[in-house]
Image (cartoon, rainbow, N blue to C red; front, side, top):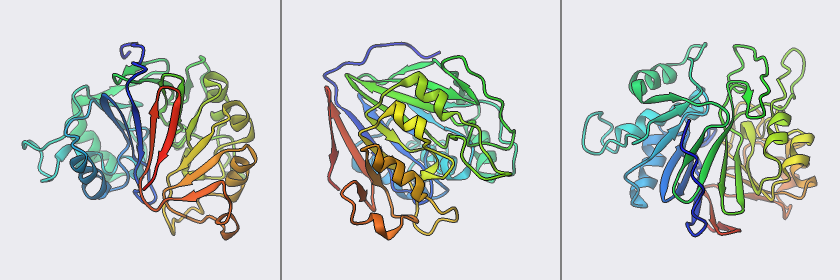
Length: 303
């Protein structure tokens, strides 16, 4: 279990949601840096490393692999190999406190996972709900991992449902909270592709949050009504790629977010219906989305 240390309320927290196309990568910075996923292959080398270099970040405390799908872990090894993409050289970015993941292994075929497991090796640390990690000005709690929720609920998972096994994180700084929902499922899906509802158990555990990283790129299987009613986010971020093969984000998810009074930011348009483009509640960034937090205030940093 990580150290339980109260955040320094005077330390600014910065959240960066990278535009990695159809994938996920986010940076949490508050004195120390935590990279949550690194997008699909090539995103680590072409997007994340240049950002880190441009912003003078040469050290990560943690890297989190929320689950083992290529669009989340494909860039992790690239980040670790640094700008020259060669392991064992001076520019390597090795997280000083290791890599956090759900443990176990990926049951399907995945060259990205095989490379991740081989390079990460002994740096991997399996997390458990209730673990808390310190970033100096923020604390990060694991609220779900591998089908287990911090309230003690254990949900039986299909071994092939890698999304439902995702690590979910709650970041708090002062009075501001951010829930990174990874690709967790909310019970949606049509037969025979129904998913387990882990979202509702998570929401009942964390309560209201200010900022939400929407689960699974706005998939129809995510962001159910109970979850939104209990979490009530002010702003939601959807990491999604144009022309993706999955129809993300789903219009039902966008409708639920708008109806709940949530401001919605997308890294790219994806399959968003044109009727939403004129909505004052929906914003297409076509680039990284940055949120700055100080004390009990947060703001979107213009791009």
